[in-house]
Length: 288
Image (tube, helix red, strand yellow):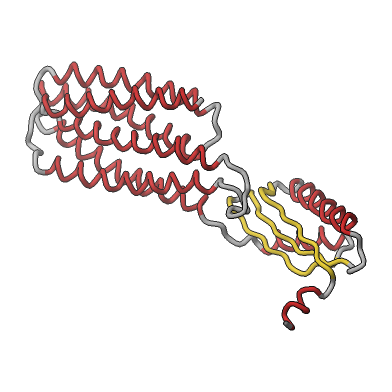
């Protein structure tokens, strides 16, 4: 699948290069602005592939909850880059606003639209195989870019034959849409990147599950990584004479029950860590 993504990236890079060159040589501001927008998408797709690989790694000594947050971090970086590119594109357009595209740019803008259809269809089939926040976000970007490419062709045709400033006006609209898309991407990534405290009802449900398990609980740490995904760390206390094997059995039993019971109310436990310690162990540590 990585080879497929890389192939799409290479093909899309060629399409972007053609858009920018055709936009400059044909004095087509809308096509040039669309090319810069697609350049942003190249950067986005590259980061998506990179962070997708990292996010698939499991837990290790320095990432106790795994690496899934890296996928959302990639989306955050993409959003920031979108805002930067929108500023560059907008500035270029403003200083050349009255520029009229050449007649042959009608053909080049239509060809770029056909090429974008192939790119979007390729990403659509890949996204159905991969479960990645950044890849899905990239598909949304390319679908938007496909619609953009169609209107680039329309605005070019109108500017060449009827109203001069339509192409430049649409180019400015593309830059504005890129700015909005960047802000929206950052907002969506922030929701997945940051954890927040679960509601009191969820905490009460966890306490009820633990009380039914007849175990002594010293500490509960819980956070939501999405609206229905929970991260949980529980510290249990057992008699100091309890064999290690039995203590581990208690921990596994509690963990299985938590995951099962929370699943019944629509909560997915992404990570559940249950620690077991002898009764009073934490107070002895504090005394020292």
